Image (tube, rainbow, N blue to C red; front, side, top):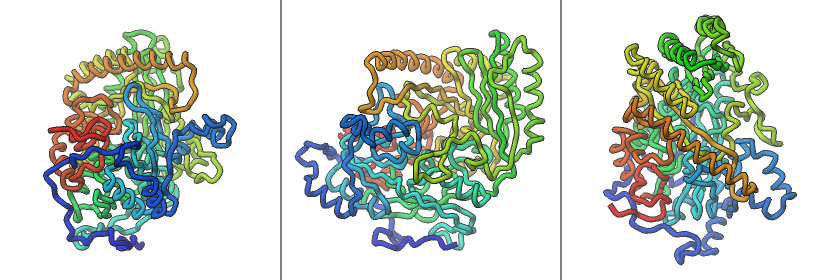
Length: 600
């Protein structure tokens, strides 16, 4: 199948063109805000809008229509669809979560460019660079860290660039004769995983390694590293990247792959979104689709502390002996009420095989009803993989019911509670596989139980690659993600949140006070629980997209030994520090909000 024309503008550089090199990280010039003398005049904004053919938007807060009129059509639409993540992703002023307690809140940019092409993106980049503006990049706004929201900035919004194309035989540009053609899928920067799963799996009968949340932006997940339910079987999302198109700080469109601009390509594979340029398109490898996908669910509550200790011991033994392999992913969680919740997925195992694996564990629980209660019925099974993301087949998917929405856009019921939420606290830690050794397992179990006494604890087995195939491990090793993931059997996530708190959303004073107290309590509980686990796995590392906003050791935690190389790439591809996200590579050169250079 024909790839695409990369030579349609002078923005595309010849293959031999090198990226500019600089010894500096930041330009040394303070960025401007509205009201500053250097802020672009109305005439300049109008000229930019004309260049963009009306795709420049002056933004206001998400709930501004309700402040003008509570019965307006725009306000009523907000009330109707605020719990719909695809709706939020389609709003220039919105983010998928509404903020983080004492950290950040959803605040719209001054202007947004609704980019349809990389020419639109380039115009925005050049304008921001020329006028010393804070630049923000957003696809769907699915960022817990708030990296796609910044007041007084210019937003480049790529949601409209969402074309998806199946490619039968793809060879990265500049790699002809050195690599073999492989099946792939290309996706614009605004595409979400529902778009790719529909095209690649539901329609084409293949598989692409993507994210669990169907409304997450494809380009953003790639740059974060990226995990899905079946990561132990197919690896990091970033490892599947074959090529990307990126508008760099100078407004030039560059191709990045293993043969062309390889350092930029490496940094895009897990080096964090928003730091390297504006990704406008990615091409990802596709895989043969396993015959079966499966699911195991249920919730068990122990009736005593000793029974809970036995249950946690049993499930960790069971994981180490039966589930620590490429077939299994997703999570278990331990609750403060002595509960164990199962929510796991399998790939490549038939219904009979899944049932055979889990039969001993289910029988163990049901044999002693005096010790254990099935709060949610234990269940397991496997089905044909192709309709896994088909709304008509899978009842766990909630469809986007807005008029005109793609018929295949849907989100998992289990993701509903995070839509629009205010994060109270969030932290993550990779647990090394040595903790599964028999002489270490009791210490692991005791620590998990002690942590779950402080706060519920989630073990995300698919977000650690230990137990994966050698091929998956080696491909992940070629990414910028913290190498700690290679020997981690799971990522521990401890998190909590409350109701949406978008600006202008009316909440009573009493409700706000209660939320404040609740957030303070939850934050302390999360910190105490995670402190116990960090004693178990010191320097374990943390996943950049699901991490603590207040992590003081973010360079080491997010990227480990890869950070020094990432700094060098940053100097190479963005010598002026135009692209800034808090706790992103090179952000040390700027203030917390990215407006003021910091002295070395």
